[in-house]
Length: 89
Picture 1 (cartoon, helix red, strand yellow):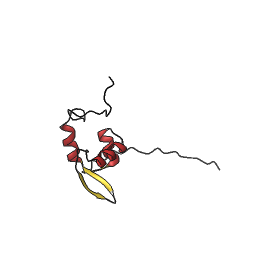
Picture 2 (tube, one colour):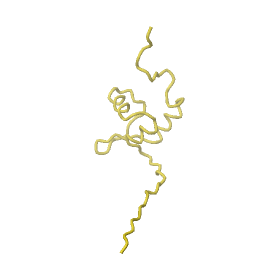
Picture 3 (cartoon, one colour):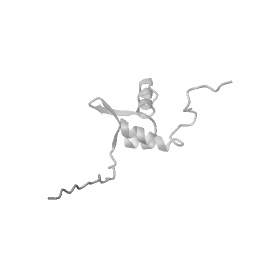
């Protein structure tokens, strides 16, 4: 009796667009690390307001994130430097 092994590959499904984003999804949209989001949340400098969390997981409104992104150029507001270091003289 011959044994046949069938290998299946996962089918990619289009991600459903949810109205609420958790930290991983937000990091992907903003193209930053989770650590950057956490640090800016702690500093109080994260520009997008949070929704009430679920199970201690912060979450954000997709609409608020999209509004923030549309009000910026390439996701960075004018006057905000992505580098914290001052130029060397």
